[in-house]
Image (cartoon, rainbow, N blue to C red; front, side, top):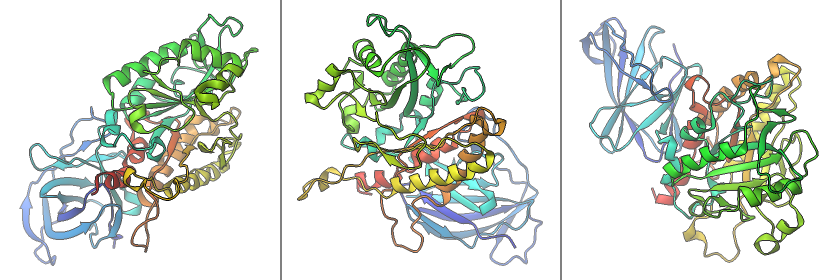
Length: 476
């Protein structure tokens, strides 16, 4: 007999299973508890992460159904008595929220997530399911519009309280040398699909000429494209265009100097201040983590470079940009001296056997972020200020140029599904406790090859982990 189905509700509202339909079973009145045997039933589903995918119609010869009442509260998991009857069977589940019903068909036709089909016109709610067949587990998320998912959060939300998807070496989507390319999709496509943290490495083209504003995008000592240099100016125009279309959003941008030549951090800082990040309507450059309302429509600068002396006097002598200059190298867990960034960036995966160690470090950093509790405005009237909540920046990325199995796309093919599984089944799970500690945030999760072949499930799972914070903010 198959294992019982586990359902986890990671939405902000209670959900109830109202009906189970088992399709593909030979008609039999002897199956206790099932009624209403029907012939020639079809089912429809659509894929949430591949909007262009055609609908699939899968005829069945018969089905039996059972009306049930199984309530799953927000942030809870429940082991049900629902068990698929055979390998050739499809199971349809009817879920209900506040009188509105949605249908899910399992098993899903691909490994990607699936949008539940609303059974009413103009639904108020939309849901996405991730079906982990090997664990007989379904996780339900709210189907956020990934191009503007930050609009659901209040202006006084600290940016560090949010679960934020990010990309590593974000513009490296071009034809390039092995291990240089880290992304399957372009920066605009990443933004449209929910990514809100960009990791950018740059090299000033003419560092001795302060009037020359040309800054080359690089990865290590290499250019990011074999067809010619790509420039920071063009990337920023794409980010500005996205923010103009989606003013509720912000993009956190980590900038670091790499490449060949004799440029210094001080020279880079002056070029960026004079030619790029000097407009307060486009950039947030205060040396602190902002509230969401301060950052909407802007790029938030995370600085992984040193400053020239004059810029150290910005903001009343506090400096310029969020200070991540002294970032520990190849670390499973370290906090920058500023206290604003806590990072997992273990990247020296020299052999494929070390990928499991990288997964472990990534999961442990997710757990650190999950334990934090955001101080909401109504809670601010306390005797002492709350502890600073840093950016938990968690790199899922690693590579070894000399080993094909450790190139970025190969490592991502193992790590990304493992983290989807972890977020769906384990992250901030309360277990036997009445409530899991913390808001369940993931922090900033920085990925390689996200969106490959249209699969944005990792991004959707990260954004979905904001549900608990959303409930607290809106008193649900």
